Length: 158
Image (cartoon, rainbow, N blue to C red; front, top):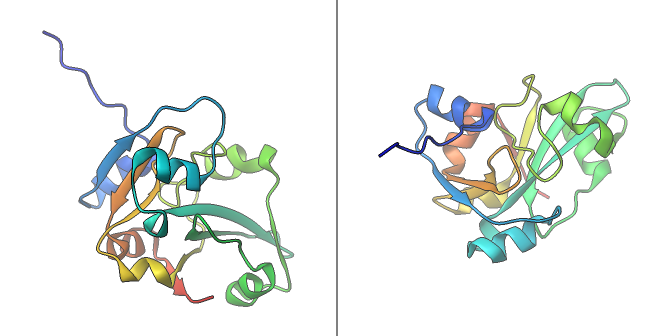
């Protein structure tokens, strides 16, 4: 009997390279669904689920923010954190070119380039958090400390 090989994403390969323990949760999907629906569909706590947002500053530099799926980002506060005059979300059409991922499957781990990552402080209240696994239909469960170590993330409040 042939063994079915799990297809690894860049996020999984990066975590493997750093010898980080993680769990993979797969879910069914049709069209793009937001993180709240993914959390409910996979049965994971919404408050432990984080979405990945990619922003661009006036300097043309990119920044990655991992925030709770049920929250919105404060662009002014994010710009202050990044040391930028202002930040804007990148257009959906640019996500793949900038990150290597598609909308709904964008992980803060394993992007095409290493961008500054900011992780919301609420993640640190949990032993494990849930982030995108690098493709739609895949969620990863890992410790926030490991996410911080692998990405070099700065923890922020707000």
